[in-house]
Image: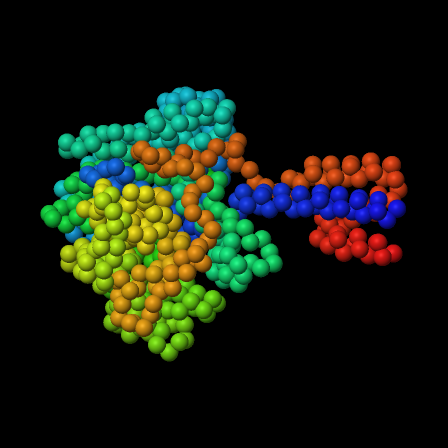
Length: 578
């Protein structure tokens, strides 16, 4: 009898092991119900104005064109009907370009949208399959105007053309790739070919948001990862969409003189006054007043993990032209300077995991900073975020011709006469054969001069890059004043969140971003519901055994104990002892 009981117990243990394995797999594929794009308290409450990411890169295989990409509206669930996501008609969405080293834009691209409802007598976004951008079954269609503003005036590049609709599912959007292609416009302007896309896309960013649990990097051993909990890295943004603007233009349309370096950032503006009209206005609202900037984003994660609460909301309303003034301000300057030149993430890496910091002469997990003296602390971080990079030591990159050592003084992406301000800077003269033959997800840190933080490509792994940069991976090349500091290369394998790419493949041609996820394919995993068939099957198997032999009743009880988290093996041993 004891042997038969042991066989039943071992069989149930095998079943529980299989169940735990399925649990781990499903957890690794599930999406957290949150977005990483929550940079500041106020903008986190205004998702339709929230700028999520900005990219600026020379497309692979090209040397004379540049792509500018900006995305908004985080955490778009694909199945968000019946009121699906769209650009906000009351907002202005901007992409800015500076081409002379100062923090003022010389070129601004602005999108203004307008919704057109065909039949207001229905709640349906579409009354049948949407087969084209002009299909009358697309009941709530959105069109937009895209202007290019320069010192010479405003040029309308796109006037009243439809965006791409949202990707609902195979019944409503049966050929979404054709709709996305139809929403890709190519216009001739001033002798230049300009390509434009606006609409819903996959969210190109990836991150495991448990990093905010005191810098937890799941997949790593404790204490950096979890030692007694779910330690499987999860892309918290997988399965979610955003709304994006993608513009590709000739490089010489943006540059001027002999300056090849561009500064790029994006933002959102709203009218300064909103009036809620109540029932008298059928629940509507009116907007008036001059547009006010409510969102700003250039380099990724700056507002999110660099700036403290004291500056977060203010930063979103501040234009880059005001950055240096704030940096030198006697009240707010020390806060901003300390956040940049002695980043809090570095303090945490040091305090929690013993990662040494450059310029920490008294070993208190903080880099010494002289208030009011820019770049007196972490010069490497200051350069990356505020001025662009010039080499203080030699650095070897990978090129089509093999390894090449850049000399001291090589200008990676610092414009002549630069005024410190936060934005993405990209050297348009570094492209083609100067790029690594196989692009490195670690960008410049991986020896690929064409990657982040020299511009930002879609596939650049900015989480890992910025963690390594804060840990001093670029210090000896960009600053090196602390001659006692040496970056430990072993940290490359440790400061890694276990995620190395997006959940959908990017496109190799314009508009480069992956198509949006369809509602029919987006799942939210409920563990209990997901395992119900497995549990029921296990229960049915056990019940059959009970009918054949009453001793098997103990196995059913053990199965219940295991699902409640009690060690089944211990329970079995106690039963055997009895």
